[in-house]
Image: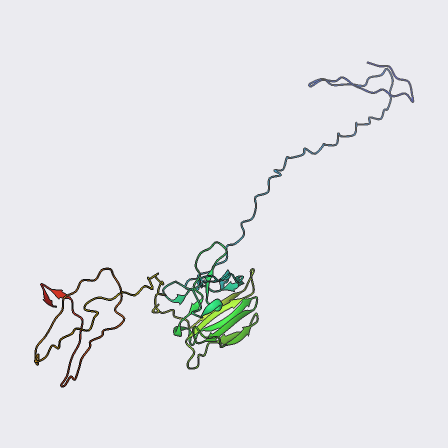
Amino acid sequence: MATLAAGQSHLITGLTTGEVVSAQGGQTFTYTLTEPTPATATPTVTPVATDVTPTATPVPCVDPTTCNPVSSIGAFWRCNTPGCTDADWVGSVISWPSWSAFEDNGRTGNQSRTVYSAQGDLLYPYMGPWANGCQITAVSGTALIIEWQRGTNVWREIPVPPGQSHTIALTSPEDGVVIEGPPPPGFSVSIKNCNPQVIEKTPTPTPTSTSSALFRIGETNILSYDDADNANLLIAQQTMLPQSGTIQSLSFYVTGASGQLRLGIYDDANGGPG
């Protein structure tokens, strides 16, 4: 491949697998073999997925019968009297099962409010007398415990900051409690010694429109003759109502009566008093 004199060098290239190189000479000689520098491996870039799987945000547990601690729900106290246009009161509450608490405060006028969630669902924050003895510990945020007599404008407020506790102690005539606080994120509490009970709810009567016109039935004129000698007798006068209505009064004209006279209105029973 090459003949070299002293001090010369030669770069060997082009060898393939299995080929060898030998150094030969007619006289004794020495040589120096310099091996090539090993090639530096180039790191292979491994593609990394750029899509990041979002971490699910934990959903707060808001059922006080199954959660401990339990989180509050954003609440809107909405005026429920006809014609009321006052703005909603806004905050957050602990809502109980519908059979154990009221959805409204039972107050009057524009102070009468029904509680809704932001989605328009009814909330039931107004606990009954069974709340007496419940121990409330604030976990996050500040809870405000209201102890009161339902429907009144007088109550006691007990703020409970994080880490502190309050045991509900109703005093007569108090019969209700509500656990409320600021708007979302609101607050969370741990509840002990609390056993919701079924409460009796009185339906709010729905006013119906009635006619204010008065009408009379029966004999409406004073007769020109007397009816006498009817002791121990039942005298009935049959009449038909021209329309439905409510009895407001019953009148009977007498002259020089003695003894006792009993008046009444009866249903018709085949032509006689029923």
